Image (cartoon, rainbow, N blue to C red; front, side, top):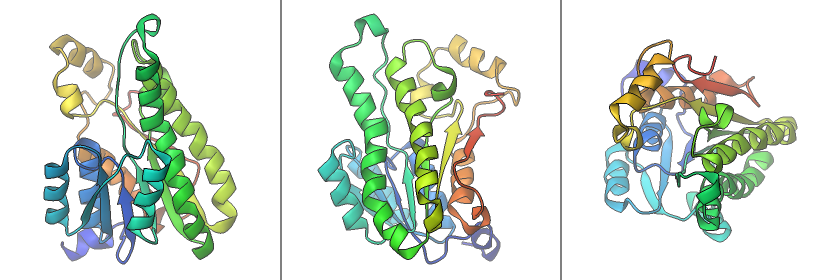
Length: 246
């Protein structure tokens, strides 16, 4: 780590938990927070090898947890210790038309994407409130703002994150604990890699910057919101989408 990279939005001496951190955006966030000087605990559910590899690379620790389950999420936060930073990134998709969507596909997405944010935040905020310091960043999606065909479950979960975070910011502000949302647009991940060329072309056509985002683009925004450089920002919804959401 260079002196300059650590000084910008420094998290030196902070402890951070990033959920869903084995791949994609979560992986980039965990690496970025470590680069900022934080001690990072990263959670995963299935990609054990990738999570352990990343933890080794960044000097952090990987913990398996099902954050869609209240007890598992609680245990994860307790295992992580006194947190200065919580980043809720865990998420899944179970796409399909509403008329054909099963109860399980609905519940899995809502529980993993939205209920998990409630479970981990509830577990983490008591310590933050007591210390009168802390930052929570929740990862939503442009789909939560604009909707998307075949994603009623995903859109509902990601829109719910925005409302949840705004309410949480109001509750925690008097204790100097901040809560913000980052809204990625279309980002290069394993999910977008499998899209047909015409679908990717349509995304690019509607994105003023004319490219897909990189996970690192999102990670930089998260780093900023977690740091003291953003100490007067709470309840914000920061779009990292190349202008798509304008």
